[in-house]
Length: 265
Image (cartoon, rainbow, N blue to C red; front, side):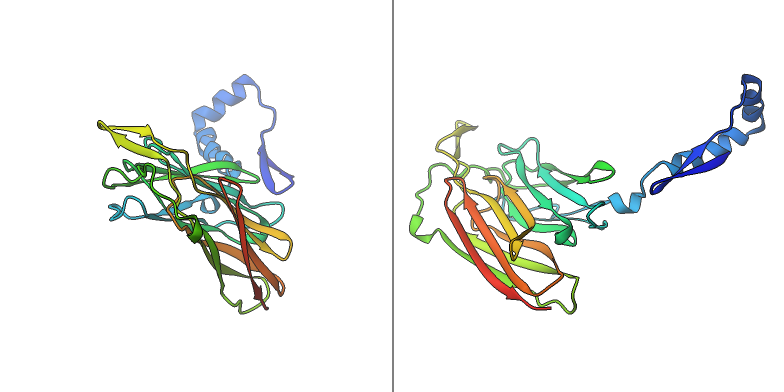
């Protein structure tokens, strides 16, 4: 067997062997010994595609289940984690949101809290720009009713007021954690009646949170009404230069708020 180098991987190439030759190889055990090595040569390194999913086994508050997702993976222009998606399929609001990353994120990481109506298997799926999608799961238990908010009265005077905290990097290129939040009620509009979940009012929530360094989009969180009220987010940023970090929030009604803070390296 010889090896042919193609781009960033090694492809095993078998010499031409007739039927009698293959039978002889199989009988000698050489074929069985060689095939596992061939399979390994064509598989992406597993250590780069392990999705870490951290959350409690039993959540104290069904309206604020804490979760942290991350992948220890390269974040280079030609090889990075594009996004991580979180959902609980049996929940009344299954989709919890999608984190969208860029090489400027520096790390595929995020932490936030979400609502859960039933608990169950939390499924996180990530996509690598080269190797496609991979998944991790973990179970969480909650009290019933976390997704049922009904038609609660909304105090619109208290919406907005975004906040931003930027850790100071020790050197250029260091990945720092950005903490940002906005005051917003995040209602699902669902209610429990007769033991069933029904639509009681329209959804109202922050649908998008974006993090910029100057005018460059770094990380984005595409949110749903399942994200907890007054969302507080922890997101990554690779501080390659001094500039202005900007957090932008957009509601499901189209309202927009933003806040800025300088970063120096």
